[in-house]
Amino acid sequence: MNDIALSKEIAKAVKENGGRTFYVGGFVRDKLLGIENKDVDIEVHGVEHDRLYEIISQFGEVKTFGDSFGIFSLKYHNIDIAMPRSEKATGRGHRDFAIYVDPYIGYDKAARRRDFTINAMMEDVLSGEILDYYGGRSDLENRIIRHVDKDSFVEDPLRVLRAAQFASRFGFEVAEETIELCRQIDLTALSKERVEEELKKALLKSEQPSLFFAILSKMEQLSYWFKEIEELKGVVQDPSFHPEGDVYIHTMEVIDRAAMYREETEKPYFFMLSALCHDLGKITTTAFINGRIHAYGHEEEGVKIAEEFICRLSTNKSQLAYVKNMVRMHMQPNTMANDRSRIKKTNKMFDQALYPVDLIYLALADRGVGIEETKTFLFERYDIYKELMERPYVGGRDLINAGINPGDGFKAYLAYAHKLRLAGVEKETALKQTIEYVRKSQNEKAAS
Image (tube, rainbow, N blue to C red; front, top):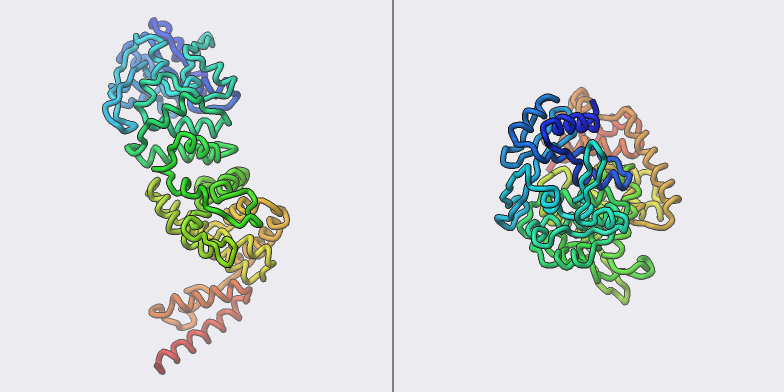
């Protein structure tokens, strides 16, 4: 039984027990927008906790999220069943709330706890009737993100990021009164995990991720979690290369272009983070030299700044390694395409890249113009590199079989063999040259 059919069966059983079941939240919103949402959220009114548990148990193994929350799910299904509740802030964090479950709270009050009007609509599972107490349908049609209740809205700081994320994801405007409320909210107590979750949605689900940062900027909410992005504003660039304006404008254009490529990459989220971070080094390296604007060394400087930014949001080491590698190398593909560099040089570049294809797409997003010719050149060279890496090559076992004992210098010998591999030297010849290199190195060491 699929989740929609299951929700209807649960609703029938609830009705037999005097209750009523609604689809709620993002499920209703996405349905009206014509967007598929595989996560089914239903809310059951008029049935006590223990009786609801018994009803749900008829349909499979029930998982609960604490009796005080009144939230259930069924194993093997993407369906959440919740009881109506109200919430009251007990602290500054996103999770600092006292929750009061009440199956008889009423539809109006149950909807009032929602963040935005477009998320506060309720659809009767059986009849399809939509209850819309706060004008959500009108705001949906007019493409507006608007808070439901000003008093409860400010109690949850995560809603600031959610407003920007929804605006970016759906291409909506945020109501001026909601923006004004968001300016008053302190985000410093949020956990890095929740902040990154909203950033991730904006970067992966938006056609124009730049809107996320544009809205946060309008709310004056970039300065804590995204201070490096804010610092890009006013960092000038050579207009002959960047007629679009400062580094902030350029970065926003790059992440929007990167969004067109993200599904082609191996690590879409890491890729989008790299696009966001690629020019952070210009914050500290931009200078006027001989009457021209330069940012010499911004790639290497950017690695340090990107690391500080990423570590504020995440403890994921592979994510950090990916972003640092991409920031350090982001200029190379376009430079080599412009110079029509030799195969040996592009082979070395791809070998140093953790994800070569992702690096190519980052370069294309950064370039903005002349993309097709550059793309053709880089992928032709990448195909050459891939074919080279598929050939037999000298490895550690080959050196050991040739009588070279592992120990001091062995890593250097393998590095030399790998250098020959990148140059396209056949394995047999490369092995002979590596053995000669080993003998020469050992003789020099013995003589010193």
